[in-house]
Image (cartoon, rainbow, N blue to C red; front, side, top):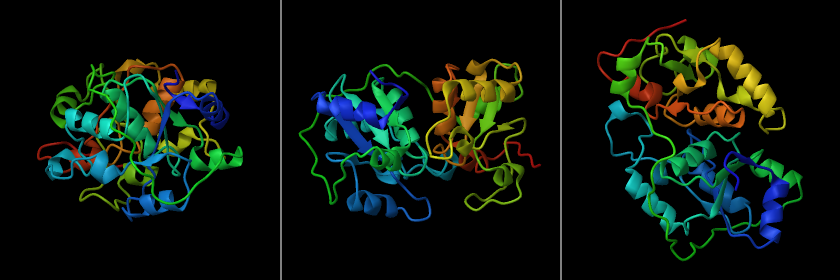
Length: 283
């Protein structure tokens, strides 16, 4: 079972052996919500299915105080997975074209729904193509529905109220995955208020990747996160970003590094800055 990363060669071996694998592509562009599907239909792994951030991985009907990409009800999401053909125990491989920015969200949500056999394709579609993997184009028909049902979650989200109550305590370490300029409050292209959660540490999600788009080694990631944490317990970490998406490469990187137990604040800065009474900092 693969539960963090899977290499293109390993996915090819599973497919060649006839092992059931559900491949889900969640490529996306925040500035152009239709771009990901267009990219998928232009080229994708044979038999893979497209999963849309706004439609499948978010509940956009929720208020602004829950952020720009609020989680859907977990039972609704479990139904989405069954509709995509997921069966209990089937290995899932998720990918995108954006450095695991969007497929990381899907990876985490599958774990939230109780499915542990899910891994990110290291390097995404570019790495698959570089390894000689086959490509097809056009839309993909949905398979027969699967038998997946929600199971006890393997991870749990943190909401604004609980994070506010925990802020400043020794049992909570906040890590912000946004770019340094957004973290410092110099710019804010997406949300109504600039800045960051007081006391948060900054680790932009791209710091987890090598130049070729693959994740750094477990040893590199472990050393970098331990240096950032400065003696704090990795299990106290709460990750966030702008809307609960680009924080996920940090969550995944800590799992790769063997620093397990961190949590996600899905509402992230977009929820925090839209909630009355939350403190904000700059610099």
